[in-house]
Amino acid sequence: MKKLSLGWLVWLNEENMSRRIDMVTQSANSLGILSQDAYQLLIINNGGLKELPFKLPAAAKHIILEENFIDISAYYVPYLHAIENNNPYFGFLYDDFIVYKDAVRDCIEFLDNNPQISCIRLPEYVTGDKKYNTTYVNKSVNPDAVGHLEGAGNTKLQQIGPVKVGENSFYISNWRPNSRPTIWRTESYSNFCNLKDSNHFVMQPYEAKLYSTADKLAVEGKYLSGYLEGGMCRTFSVTTSERTRSSSNFWLNYTVDVPKLVENYRKS
Image (cartoon, rainbow, N blue to C red):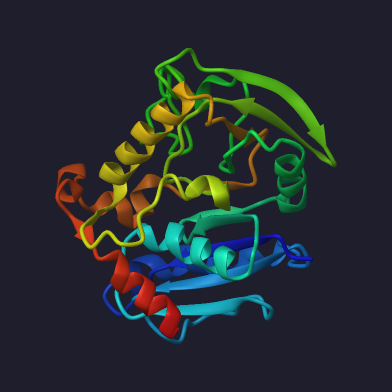
């Protein structure tokens, strides 16, 4: 039985084709290592070309959105699919990440065995290695580096483990959720989303909302996260990322219409 709705968000159009096609093709090809018997792979076409110029896994379901809803498509489309199909989990990947390990079955088992965990981080990360710690390495050098100063609820960061599951190891943590590839417990994410919001923040402002919600839930004892030791995907160079072509200030007041996104999804 499939328990996970896993989205891959792609944005490719005539304007960005020349600078993005090589990276996106490599990302698409890397999806081939994911065996889909435990999850449904969703190709989320974020308002780009309806016919993508590369091969995709045959069993993948294509979701074609009429508009670009920025990174909110990555969260809400697989979340909606999970609700419709009674999947306890959903997750997302982006077209500027390359998948190097198929660890999804073990991620599902880890979540099955640890109902207190709301979500699992998937990007490349090695516990104790300073190159993944933004105190020592800037994200412009390693885009998969992450802050270690504190955890949800403004408490000391916890990294409890390792916990062996199948061929992989996991840690239980109190890292706040962010926009990097993640597997979410569908029920838990209902505390972080708003399907009726017609002025929904994107990018860093939405991350700030995720942080504040996680802080509140952690204080109530209702939020913990986990991460996959070694990860299963890594980001391409920051210089190739579409997200870095605009300054962070550009996104401060940028919003998308979630009811319209839901309508797009249901029409696709």
